[in-house]
Length: 273
Image (cartoon, rainbow, N blue to C red; front, side, top):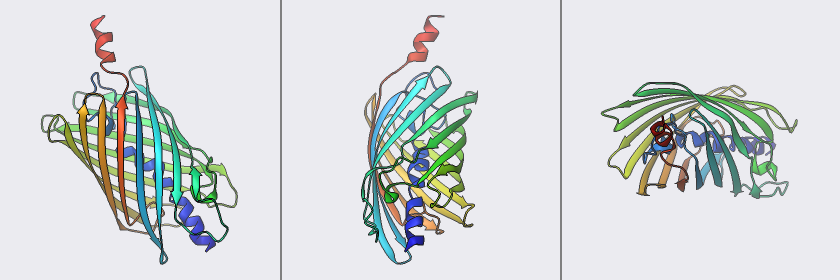
């Protein structure tokens, strides 16, 4: 049971790495698909809730995480981000750990776009997840560094966007009784715009675990809708394909909304030149 509890706690790693399918923006106008393009940074707020179902060693349980995310654009090429999650799980712990409360707060120290052409871009960022959970069942018990690199390119007259994400997770402090966290995540993202208001995202993700060894994979998809210029709504789902690493769930569903605060700031700056 102790091993199962430790494995369950590691599942919260998926909470802050999952967010990469919804990323940031540096283009001069806020297109409807901006927040799903890893090469773009725009100031915005998001609220989303995800329900994940797991089956570990015959034990079935659910994890529900509701997250408030704020993204702030800093100048032309920089961004920062803060995620505050509230977590509930149905895992029946023999130690009567708290099952609902604040999870591990994570934030992006700095995101930077260091290469851009008309169709492609490369970005890098450093993120950190803090050991702030109110219970061992609500977080990893570790402070974790998450460097990330992305490459994006537009095809089909920019109606389709392809992106590749590499992220590393390395724990460096926290509860000494908890296992260290060390893994790599490789993710592909295919975004297709069906119209100015509707687009879909397809995103397989592969995890390589360096603590226990082995690889695991999830397959995720999203349908998004823009009812207004500054508002996005989306529905997200995913299924676990193989592997037993903690972030590999049986299935997941998510709904969310976002609001863009600033628009066309770079255009205004250019018009003054």
